Image (cartoon, one colour):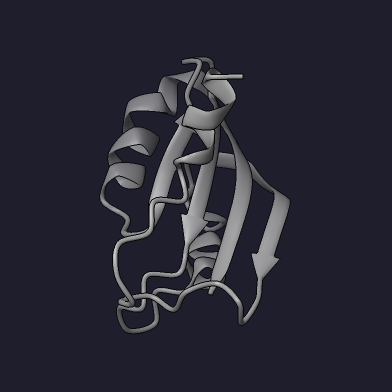
Length: 100
């Protein structure tokens, strides 16, 4: 299981195209989109074929709309549940921060 935190940059005029591409990718969660050509996304392995988090990030890096991708966090380990072992919401930590 791998989880990647990534910052994406694009010219603001490509915002809609990038949002459309992101919404169609399994295992991708847009954490922040301030509307100025920056996105913070979390990418997880999905267990569907070759859709690893690293492969997804590699594919994103080739998008002509993007100016750059920056890997800012990586988790990879055997202690995380494998894809398909049941529902795991890795976004739940955001709720605990809001209650702090």
